[in-house]
Length: 302
Ligand SMILES: [Zn+2]
Image (cartoon, rainbow, N blue to C red):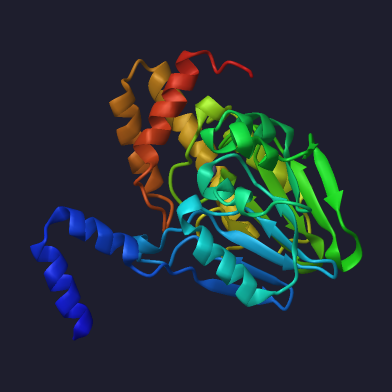
């Protein structure tokens, strides 16, 4: 009752008040428990876009402290930190960012001092271009980088970082927890929909299918896939996404080779997407445009 009265008053006061009300809405970050030492702070509650807090975050509890994979959007920092604290009181010792985007790196600057940041070398370069890491904030840029593969910790606490090639960006890390038989894919596999191809950060729709194919060939003994922005999945879903991105590329290539427009390529791609059960098509047109542009540019190597 009280809440309804408050909302009514705000509506009377017009647009500015409504904007304030939106900001004051309580922030919700759900936690998915996978094991006693690994949790996911989810990207959003299914069906509720108001809960979009940034990418899925892996919270791995080791003897020495907490390892985080990604740090969500800056505006969700307080809620994010309190959710991490609700899982473990141990200090955060290590942060791995799967790639450069602000919904995966937004709260790096909330962790100073002894926290070690680890990213792919191209992601460090991409992060250095972001306003969020300029000036004073440059101190939060990762100091530790890898090129093809890096192992952190050992035994049951081992984490393997892999780079398989360009796709979403040119610095997408796959983060494998062998003891959990689990991989976090970042946004190379974010959702069942057209891939976001960030060409400004080295992403490539032409390389995308073979990058995922390389990952599938290299990663064995994995049961659980934590995508960038979707609920937990299985390796079969990643295998299907590899076929989907290959189909998408081929559809655009075929359309282009027969002299069709980008709109015709998009229509063919939307029809192709319908063959994949459970796939959305909100992001297909944008992906087609990006692949089209990349092919026009000669699929230039970077
Ligand atoms: Zn991203």
